[in-house]
Image (cartoon, helix red, strand yellow):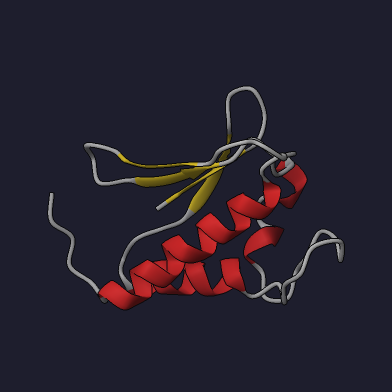
Length: 104
């Protein structure tokens, strides 16, 4: 499956998701990046996950659940804007066993 778009912009989205997953992943854990047959790219971690109440807020500019980790709260907002500009979408699901899976 081929996808047309700005390669650098999509790379930035995936890099941001990997960076977030690495910060969420427990010590000695592993994140998973996969590309499914339908073209969905998934970045999976096994951290605390994203509560249902926070799922829409995480894509708002400057929203951060906690100041415990570094960041400006712009990464997921920018990722959503890039995906929207490409006619795609970004969403989060629970990871089986705990954690979050971000899909593009």
